[in-house]
Figure 1 (cartoon, rainbow, N blue to C red):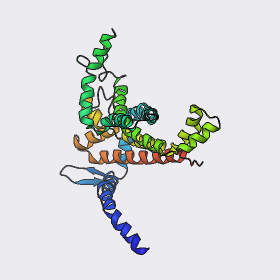
Figure 2 (figure 1 turned 90 degrees about the vertical axis):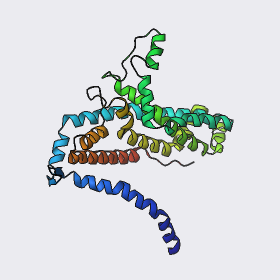
Figure 3 (figure 1 turned 90 degrees about the horizontal axis):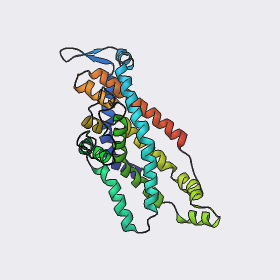
Figure 4 (figure 1 turned 60 degrees about the vertical axis):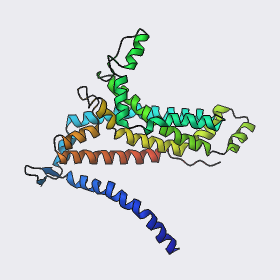
Length: 289
């Protein structure tokens, strides 16, 4: 038994070392760096929690947090619901060839570079030459400034996030649906349950682990969104689409305030950890049949 345990540890050791070097070491350095302020000459000065007070009382920081939460609220529920609906539709296809073809089509946007996709969507949203305003013109509707409007920029970016993540979540739900034994539905049909009752009493309860997992993944992805926003709006107009990660990037690599950026990184890590644990605790439940 000890030999098998040692063999198992050796197999997972490369992954553990990689995780430690890529994730844990930068995290520890960010926590330590949040207590130091850069001074002229490349040195650092210990300032205690002074940087935390500075960042957490900065209106620009909380505006970026609000923009991030706004994008998250618009993107996550819509992505999860649409992915589940698409997976249910694909699961009803009897021919495996058509199911695989449609699943691959939905998954394709996830395989595309987010920067390349953002540039394409920037052209679609263009107020003069964009395909979306051209379509509105064909319907005799006035053109809209999708990425230049304070009110429309976040919904427009949320739509890009939904488009990019829909296929990934659909594949997860589709795999989970195929793992549900058909005997459950046959027994429900014998008892007189209709499609809606089977969905409520069998499908959704058995998909609860996947729904919670997808919601957590989407929460993390949308909270850390950077590529699409930076490639399309650079945080504009007037900071209406600037996210926390974008502000962190600008603070660290444009203004070279590494201590302030470390505080923001710690804030993002703690926020995601707490929200993920809370979500896991509230929505996870065991289902047995």
